[in-house]
Every structure is written in structure tokens, then in C-alpha cells.
Length: 253
Length: 253
DNA sequence: CGTTGCTTTGAACTAGCTCAAGACCTGTGG
DNA sequence: CCACAGGTCTTGAGCTAGTTCAAAGCAACG
Image (cartoon, rainbow over all chains, first blue to last red):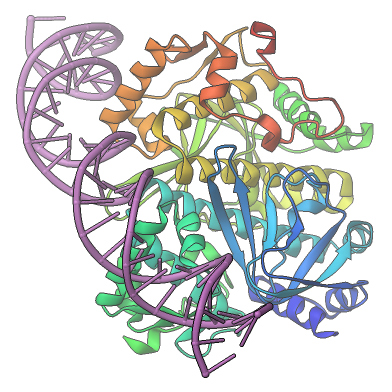
């Protein structure tokens, strides 16, 4: 079960430097484990959260329901992510955090989290940075939602999720676990279910992705990337520490 | 010129508590003043930022240009806002920060900012919180962009901006300074210029807002709010410290 | 008073929506 | 082992919100 800390450490090291002391502080954090059934809320819109979680297994997503029944999914969170880190300083939730598939998380009470952070400016900076990268991904999505058509958005989504999965060590060469129904996909892309279905067929016919049985396979990365106008810069992985190398580049150099 | 600190203090107090020591630390921050012409970038996409700014006067906006010429505006920042606070931990910009009208800002070098923050966990928490509220506003916009039609989005925008202006003491009863062209409005709402024009006329005909000469007047707040599906909770002002009271409620109790 | 930037209008077009039905799949109980 | 139920996917067809293109009106400013 201690691989909760490993997952977290790995995640933080993907976005910044971590000293031995920082790692030790992380390792000392108390964890409560929790399993979630598919569709179960970890915390719902309007509730007050008292802990932050690390995803250990499965997929969580954040979403908000509108009064008229519409739902927008904001982000997807595979293992290693901390999807409610923001609740540390914004405890009243303005959206839902839900399990997309059966999932396991480790929870860290806010009190302990705060205690660790006042002692470690290094960790504070890293966690803060993590929430800022989150916001950067939101901006990238706003650009998609506001300015691009359905096929571009869908291609972009697959690019983004594949990149995140690859960075987290969760991608198997060209494919990754992606437990969404087409309804979920539609709610994420801001299009209707029918149109999501047709757009997906379009991508399939172009031979760039396959998506079946909760698994996405990238068949033609550079073309998918082109369609999706995908530039991973906004993910801010290793910003400026390493030249930009993207997973899947091997396919089409 | 010291009202730069006043503006900042006021802003932070709108979103949390500030102790005398915190206020003193703020007051000791070194400031560089800068004026911007309309349309001038304070910092552009891809550049590395070395300071954070406080808007003193005018309006800044954040936006990203897509390769195909499309532009999405993410947020608008009146006086008191710190629109590039995120650059402290994410120095490479993934979008532009530009003056919407002639503006004045005070800049604080990252180095000084960091020095102040390691000494004050209180300020760290407040600034962090400020960036999180930013992200919450992005989520609210994603919901709009993905799930609602043009008139709802436009009404929502007016509600949001009026609320922000009122909280910052920048609104004059029912109206506030809003220096956008219809093209800007369109780029913010993710619709075409022509449609922005027609949607605006629709709102005018319904008698809920007027928008002329860089000024928005709210003519019928509760109706505007209804059309825009506006619930200010996501702005997290004074979360839970004060019951929810909204500017303009007096109009239609 | 002419240029330049902003707003308004008309008209044809299209991406994406809604409604509705059928196909398919997987697990459950008889 | 079959039937049937609930969720998911697929398809067709008509409709609408929003787009593009193009032109004209308006206002401010040097």
C-alpha cells in the first residue's frame, strides 16, 4: 500500500525537483485508503472537503451538472493525480469528483497536509505548481471548446490523455486504459452523444485511433496530433529542464 | 502610488483573512510601475515571466491564439487582480497577458515575492487561494462554453464581470467600465462577431442590459442572472464567512 | 472630410442537435 | 441454456443555432 507515496512522488518529480527531505516529508503523510465503485462520488458539488486524495488505481473525473441537466466534464485523473488538491484552500467544492471506473484512492487530511506544507516551502511550491498545471489544462480546454470543431477536440483529448498516461507510466506502447462511454466523451467534448459517435467513426475511418473495450489505441500519432492541434507545452512537464520529447514520436519521426 | 498595495490588500481581504503582519509584509514588497497602451502585451505566449503584476487601472485580459488565427479570451482582469500570479511557479507563459484598455500595473519580481512567501505561510495560502479561484472561474467558463448557448454565455459574462467589479468597488451602482469591442466579446464567448452582435441586440431588446461606450449597465439583474444561469458561488468570495448576498439583489428582492 | 476601426444588416450555408428507432452486448434469473 | 432487461452503440432524418461572406452605416479622430 505504500506505493501511494511512490505514485505521488513520481507525479511530483514529473513536474519539478524533489529533495530527499521533501521525499521524506511526503513519506510521513498519513493515508486513509478508500475504494470507489464506478460512478461513485468521492466528493460532490457544494460539499465541504476535509482531505486531499491521490488516485492509486482507476480513473476519477471532475464535472459539474447544470440545472437543465447538462453536464460538463472538466478533467480526467488517472493514477498519480491529485484531483482535489485545490480543496486544501478552497474546501467548498464547486463541482463533483467522481469515479469513472472502479478506483482506489489514498486520502490525506487537510490538517496533516497543511502541517507538512508549512514545514516545507519546497513541497508547497510543488503542490501549488501542480494546481497551476491543472489550470493550464483548463485553459487549453477552453481554447478547444470555444474555437475548434468536434473532431479537433476529440483528437486533442486523445492526445492529451495519452501523453498524461505515458508520463505516468500507464501507457502500454501505443494504447492506454480509457474507461469512458461515448456519453462521457460527449459530456467532456461539449457535443451530443450522437455527434460524439459520428466523430469517433470519422477518426476511426481516418485510421488514427481505435477505441474499444475501455482502451484507446493510437494508430497514427503525428496525424492525430495534427488533427487535434496538440502541443503538449501546456502540460508543463519538466518545463525547460529537458528538451521537448513527446511520447509516440517514434512512430513518425 | 502606494494604492497599489491598497488594491492588493483589498483584493486579498475579499477572499480571505489577512493579519497585520501579513499586511505589513505586503506593504514591504518592492514595486515597479508600468503603463500599457491598449493592445500591448505585458507578457506573451511562450515568454518566460520574471515578475507578477497587480492591475492598478484599466483592464488586462488573458488569451491564446490558435495556429489557424482563432483566439480565445480566458479571463478579464480589472484593478486589484493579479492575472499572472501563476507565473511565480510556472514562469513559461502558455498564453498572452494583454491590456484591453490603457492600463497601469505594478510589478513585483518573483525573487522578492518568493522571499516574502517563505516567511509568511499566511500570504502563501492567500495567494495560492487566489490562483485556485482563478481555476474555479475557468471551470465555470468551460461549463458555459461546452453546454450553453450564446445568449446564456453572454448574460453569464455580464453577471460575472459585474459581480467582480462590484466586489472590487469598481461598479457605479448598476453599471461598470467594460472596454471590450464586440470582436473581443465574440472571442471570449467562442462565437462569431456577427452572432455576438445579434445576441447583444437580443439582450438589449429584452431590456436586461445596455452596453455602449465601454460601459455595461445592468437594467434587470434578476432576469439577467436567470438567463445567464449565474450562481456566484464559484467566485468563492468570503466562502462561508458571510451568507450569500449578491450585488444588485436590491433591484429585485 | 477622409481614413480607420467598430457596428449593423442580409442571405446563403453547415456543423451539430433532437427525436426516434433498431442493433448489439453482457449479465441475471428462470 | 434461454430469455429478457438495461446499458451502450449505431443509424436515419429533419431541424436550428450559429457560421461565413459581403456590404453598408456610423463615429471618432487627426
